[in-house]
Length: 64
Image (spheres, rainbow, N blue to C red):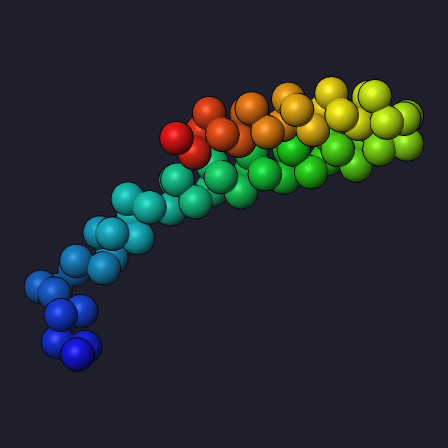
């Protein structure tokens, strides 16, 4: 079952090197959306809806 996970030496290191920038970018984008939502949360429902809609668009455009 786990024999399919065995690869040539250095494969998983190279995989990590390629995926790390993507992981970092997603973390930064999500953190920015969280910070925006947190700051605008005290203003009101309409403002919160606008920030949520904008954040959803940004996250979806990066993920697709």
